[in-house]
Amino acid sequence: MNFTIMDLNPEDDQSVRQCAALLITGFREHWPGSWENMEDALEEVQEALQPGKVCRIALNEAGEVLGWIGGQLDGYDENVWELHPLVVHEDYRQHGIGRALIADLEVQVRQRGGLTLTLGTDDVNDMTSLSRADLYIDTWAHIRNIQNYKGHPYEFYQKCGFVITGVMPDANGRGKPDIYMSKRL
Image (cartoon, rainbow, N blue to C red; front, side, top):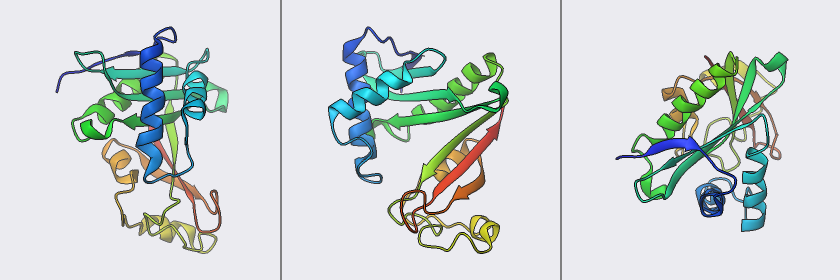
């Protein structure tokens, strides 16, 4: 599949709206309540377009947004950047677009002096064995023995070189953790 990765132009209203629509459809099934309407999704896209952040899109030859990725500083003297968000159109998943967007973000972050790329990937729908586990007891054993029950994206990120570096128990309610992953650049 042919696609081009470039900065999202804030003046390109059509692409901005396509990115917002991707947030709504891309997160609806596994992360309900993330972005439920266009207003909330557009606000997230506009946030990703703020100065000092990275906002990149994958476009096909017809100019359709196939996916987008954002990156922002996460403190630590500008050494650490957070990947947020990443979404690929459901019809174009498993075509290398997500991997390509991550690889491109890594280049962008390295060019800005970043040493680490980090992300949080929530488990709000019992998708992994970390959900409903008491992560305050033997935390690292739970992480070491993590199982993917319903296609949680942590395995995708592992294939892209990220490792689980921790969890935040109950981040999204009791038994609904956030899984922290990082990658050295």
